[in-house]
Amino acid sequence: MATDTRHSAMELLGAKLLGIGLEADATPPQWLLWVGLHTFSAPNRARFYQRVIGLITGGAQLQQGIEFLYERSHRRSPSTAQTVVLWHINHALEEGHSLGAALNGIAPPAEVMLIEAGELNNRLENSLEDCVSLIKNTSRMREAVVGALSQAAMMLFVTVLSLIAMADYVTPKLALAVSPSHWTGAGRSLYVVSEVVNTWEFNVAIGILGAMIIVLPFTFPYWTGRLRAVLDKMPPWSFYRLLQGGSWLMSFSSMMVAGMQAAEALRQMMPVANPYLRERLRALSWQLQSGVLIGSALDNTGYEFPDNEVVEDLVAFESQGTLDEALGRVGKEFIDRGLSKVESQAAAMRTLLTLLFGLVIAWIALGTVQIQIDMQASLMSGF
Image (cartoon, rainbow, N blue to C red; front, side, top):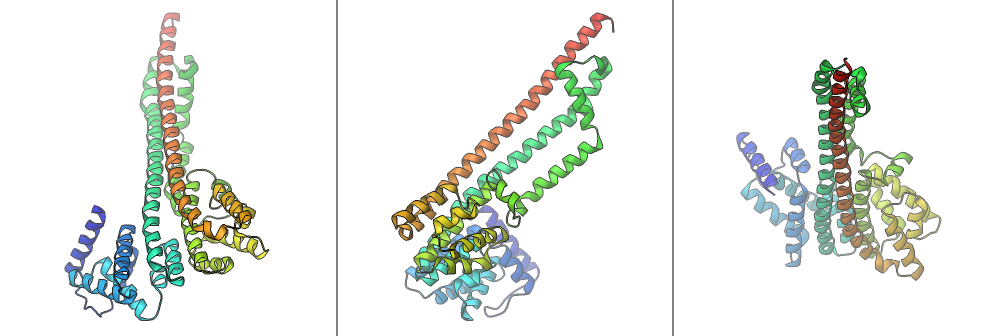
């Protein structure tokens, strides 16, 4: 929340320094519109949805409510991201677009799909509440994922730094006291590893590893194929599968509640889905065309998406004829269960990396002690 406040203050200060003073009916400059649409953060979206819910519940029409929010925001600060986004949404509604269409490109596809489903079945307030819940849960999931990956990167960095320090400072000084040819056991392994660490190949490998860690999160929405399907079963790829799976399931169930056929719901989801999700939706669509129901179709795709437990639940509800009633509940339960699963997997990853770091440090300490023992043995034998 503090970060969003600082961002808004910086935007307002920048606008004042540049002398921007937009009239209420004026079109914002393209650069300001681009910045506004790309900096409308998750907390800002959640607050926007809550305000729209309040206005609609109070009896206001959607377009009137958005126009009211825009005019108030414009009076306070005409050039902030929130004002620019409200101008964009208000302008889109005036041109006859739906709220979901207005938010396309601003909000994530899952939120857009939820809102469009709510507009179809006249349950917009419920869909907006689902969006708020989705933002809160995905934020918690994302924090767990980012925390786990950050700690993993830090542990790897410290481990590599320890190896470099050992190779550049510890091993050379010990080698001055006694030749490494007399080192045995753990001490000998320290010397071998030190020689490897001092090669250019090791530096290249570390550079590639570092680049992969940095680039990895950006590949999640785009990487598809068989290898990705295999990696989806383990962290950190499983984290993204759970995030996307929960969001999709909630959106899909809302569309089904609206009376939409499964095939039509998938067809409408395709254009706003990223390549990762689109690959799974396309496979699911092919299965549905063969006449099977949604649970069996998900099972037949082989992607284990969104999750094996969910697929088994849906297949069971199919056999009982209660799938339509249970779909929404399964989606919300999966979000809660997915959050717990992400947090437990993140904790397991942290524990594993902490253990790895501890083993490296213990190995260095043991090797140093072994070298000292070898040094004393060499001195006593006359070397």
